[in-house]
Image (cartoon, rainbow, N blue to C red; front, top):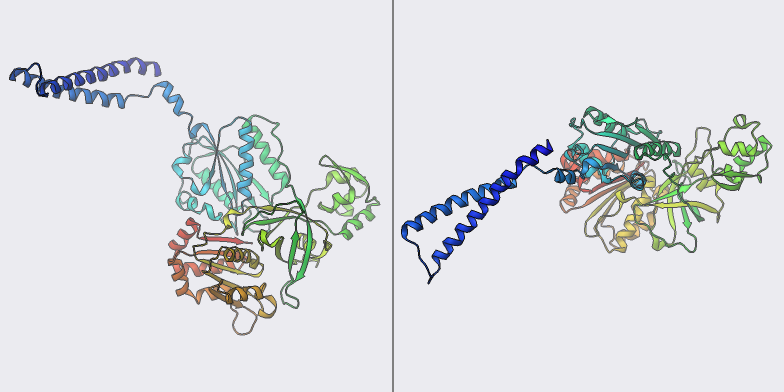
Length: 547
């Protein structure tokens, strides 16, 4: 067919080119006739003839030009245009805290290093008609709350996922990030997978679920990447490169509270580290088991703590490896020598905490509760930071950017809403706003008792008195009378809420996913309307860091 088209087209090209030449000749003659003082003239009959010739030539010329413009595409041009989305691999991400975006970027690098053309896109900025232009697509998506899409992806959910699309030529894969503690584990990843299947797309492989950054699941994803790239030797992703920080302060903020103990933790960096983070960013902590738990296992197995074993290509003491790993029960590990035991151990997952300070403070501050297991023992992360780590001792830490919760421009009014340890993320934003001279700040905070659970209360009152917090609304549910929570304080201020939103305010919510966050969302929708709330989310003026 391409050869046939090439044979037909020259006749059209010749027609167009010839007509254009005739047109130009007619114009030249007419211009000469009209020139004053021309050396020659034409009889009136000739003038009429040339005028008619000019009109016909112009018509033919323009028609020929139109034919040339609408010609069938030549094979070379078709091959050039083929270097579009259809020949690339789309790698789209939907990220709430930045981790999904980080994994998407790593995946894109692996594929590009293998020679593939990859287009990295934010799913929230992707349109269905653009998606239909790809032959291969990979999606790295997180789930927030009970099965919800990350806030930046809400535009795609609203505009695309409400009905099936026509994607019969698309082959795809999904990496779904989640937390098995929630009922709808990887809920958004599954919803996206269902929508793609319902739109006629063909999966390259089954959806890959990742529980809290599980390295085994991520290695499985890398296996699929190697098959797509046709290179089974793609390099493994490295584990987070923690830095060695020091526990400088540990202070219980709510002694005597009816709730769980909450601690202010200050961590100072190595001396040669340049501090760089923004309000809204995350501190990833590499937790460790207690020395007592490690010693008890070693004693039960009759193994020497100082035995050197190989671990991930490094030679380390057995007790050091045990400290960073899920401990096997003595019944599971019985009869194993030190090397075999080390080979079976799985590393402890990291824990994430909102950063409550700025680099100018010289330390990372975090606010966390001591979480207790059913048997009364402290949880993994909180046990390490609140109980087991020695003052002045080493803490493995990495800072991760969380752009979805970064601050708006200082000129924009900001409504900060939170409860409990969510005060940490709100405190960092207030510090940043105060440093920028922004005074249009409204804080709504809720907890149990004002005399015990008003975290950073003295600091917040001082900022209010200095004019940096324009409005401070508090809700303490256990201080007598009817139970009042932060969402009730927001509902009681409906008129002010509408005024602030009309003035361009952004809303940032930090704290409990259960109770507070859905309660606040319900009040926003009742006061502002669903369409306004959805528009705020799409515009990035309604952001959440909830857990």
